[in-house]
Length: 126
View 1 (cartoon, one colour):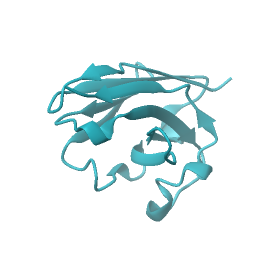
View 2: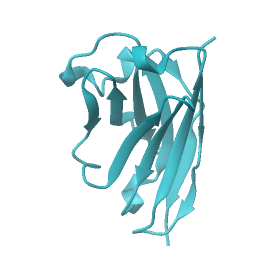
View 3: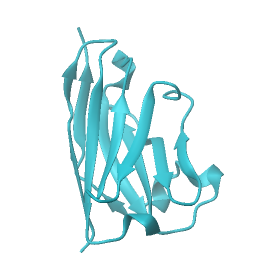
View 4: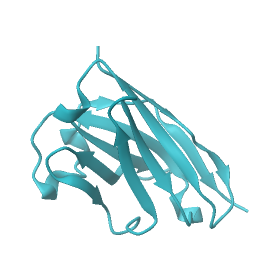
């Protein structure tokens, strides 16, 4: 059974850093695209970044240069290192997985991901 579990969320001051982890089980990471999405209160769930074996990494413009996605196949874990955090980064962060072969334009289309974790709260506030 495919399962994703996020951890590492919390409260951090503006300019600070957090690292989120997405522990995966029940499938081969190499066969899937793993994405990170976030959802702020009252807003749609939006894509942040993703990683796969074919194309590597992808970032939305809002996080490019601040966030880094990586994975450790041996630990079956995908990470999202978040630096220079801003109050507008406050949201619940979800990791998601899809085996669908995505075109680059579709990387942040949430409906194409069919497995989701429970989410981790990230709050950026002074």
